[in-house]
Image (tube, rainbow, N blue to C red):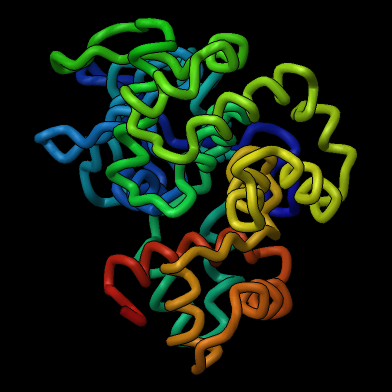
Length: 302
């Protein structure tokens, strides 16, 4: 828990209607949330809504405007049980944005991605998804995650004519042949890394509750012992699965943005990371998401 989270469940404005649940939350925009590079197991519908899978549940979220979103295909009880934490609704993002926006550049970034929330994702799926993400593009990552779920996960239901599957359990993915992964999921050189990392996780290399005792630097070193996990992938897992919000993943996009807006010259990724941690402090992870979305959508530094 960080200083922006409530000890008790933060009260939200959630109304049950015939169409679904209406969530009124100023810092909540499904486009910002799902298009900021933090997750891959979702589908954008023709009506502009987003359908996502989390822990065998299918949820659809449509922006209505004026800080309201329509949430469909989920009961009020299941929303509170599963998606209150998933959407990080215990955290006061209005307060976070005010603290981040210390200059004009950061104010523009937080205004642009005003509805971003960092998802609290499941550890195994996040780990494998970001192993797939190395030197890859988001459409290909999404496709690989979808195929892996369809072939090795469990069918959980249909929504708007599309079938949805859970992400496979670790014991199922560790027994898949690398060649099969490469052929069907098109994961390329990541095939053996996915299988071996799954095996190591099954044998206890990672454990969410146990690992909470570790400092972030030590946990990062532990993550990097797994095949396919370098500094950037480890930071993504720390931020999106372990809730280490001081973490600042540096990929090609964020490096360009930081160089263009703050550092004003080309530098190594490690220097970008050091600068961000010093400048943004314990808000570095939140700031990274605002800058990533703002920079990528506006093509800053490209």
